[in-house]
Length: 213
Image 1 (cartoon, rainbow, N blue to C red):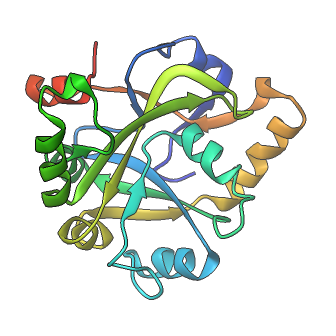
Image 2 (image 1 turned 30 degrees about the vertical axis):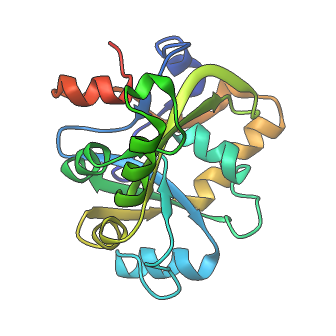
């Protein structure tokens, strides 16, 4: 698949961290692939025009997920109603970094180092949400490793919908093909996007995100 590197799931599993907070993704210095699922009308418009418009709402928060298997858990391998159209969005790395620098955690935690009131003020002011959830294996089983998702609204949704995007790919057919291996309990032949943990040059950002080498 053009612009989309694949590797056997079982081979990747040997190299992946088993626990901790990790942005598992396919990326290089210029871009990172993130995933979203939509109903056909929105997905087709995005692929045809290479930006989000038409029935896509610029007023609602939109969530992006860099981790393929976490997206498969959320959309049940593209079988969930209204999420059948699965997109691989090649996003500018600078844009992702900008999102994360502006992100506020979606739930309060003592580790944030601020009071609940300060956090509530930040939530009101920020247009980017950040949350870590349990990652999942191809069958949807919960793992110890945490997966990130990033919620965008207002000016961040507007920039994400168009100028932050390099390429939008429809991977619905690929998802459907690979789902068959999962249904047949055949993980030996399961192919998924090649992913590795992402760390930034910015130590302050890594610390904010709880990322570790």
